[in-house]
Length: 297
Image (cartoon, rainbow, N blue to C red):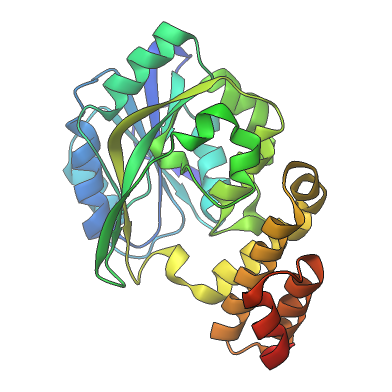
């Protein structure tokens, strides 16, 4: 059951951006994130908070902000990030959609810059470069997405690139591809979704300025190595034919070797051996594959 606390859903509003924020038991971080969104220079926005069954002070935090721009929905049963995003999309009133997680951050001009580019070039979505704030390993670095502009489909099968949170989407484009949000791919659902939409040849562009910061902490879903490993395995199996079509044996071998390493870190040595062996069989010319095959395969 879903309950709404604030304003009801309205008809679609031209040029409004609906910002969808799924959240679960991160009341303190959520408050900072919502304040960050409210400071955007582009002010024709609504914020849709989808609380996935939190048991902390999430509802009180949202209420305390006293903003008419915020709509709050509560999942009485936990559904996961993908289903919470779908709920937010279905309740949105804007003609554009953007996503932000409850512990991440945007540059204050993010929505304005992306909206202007979207309008000027009539695009399906606009990405931006972003910053990774890796608090687990105490590292901070920038990620450039320019390489995706010339050949999105070939680049996306090499490795994850854009996040949903660094993009602004036409709502029409999101509605056409909403069914591609796959809960089984969490916490790597972004990579899975972008692989899926790359098959549709969307119109997009990238802003070179980093407008999004991904805060990776021990509380982040992506820091759960077991879930992340299972998700990567699922994605490789799901899109295997597409990987073969858009990539080559060397890259597929690299994906298998990466997965073997992840299973090894999880102490699942049987699966680790299996994927190291697959890596070698796909590309036996790699010295790394030969060494791993010798010791672990």
